[in-house]
Length: 111
Length: 112
Image 1 (tube, helix red, strand yellow):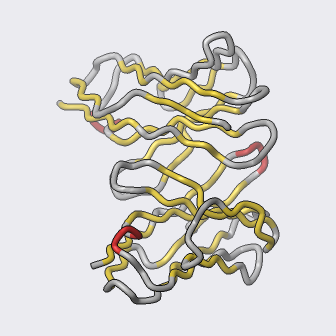
Image 2 (cartoon, chains in turn red, brown):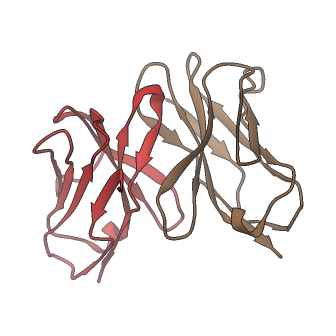
């Protein structure tokens, strides 16, 4: 069974559209994250939720809005997509001992 | 704030060569240190970690020692394989928080 699953794996869309990326973890972790990986492979945290509450919100445009309906899910909704949003987005969940489990990534391409 | 610096890639090696990927960090207190690996088309996986000074993390033939005096956590492997080709990320979690801070990643390419 996949521990952290995110969908879709690939997302191609036009500028100005609104899209969502879903993430689910079946590990029983309390903390979930969204990371953005740019074309140079540099990873940067975007958001972190603990038990459905936002605990980290880095400098991210307001067009990005995370939603956590329960502690097993952390979805990412993006409004008015821009070219610069093209990247790979990784969901992760946190375990004891500080180990993170990552999803396989969603490659977003904005045309 | 916390930061991680790792060597620029790509690193290209022949099979069975010795690997070193340098990683240094800046953090207050005593952070926990990690190496993550990203194989092509996959998400990051934890490769190894060390939580205190002089600890050595090891996994799959890779090793890294937490050196407080040099604020380093260099990744080493004695004999690389083609299957080790991936991007390697050094990372830390500072004592004050729970957020991973990543280095920029180093791409390793191993040729037969």
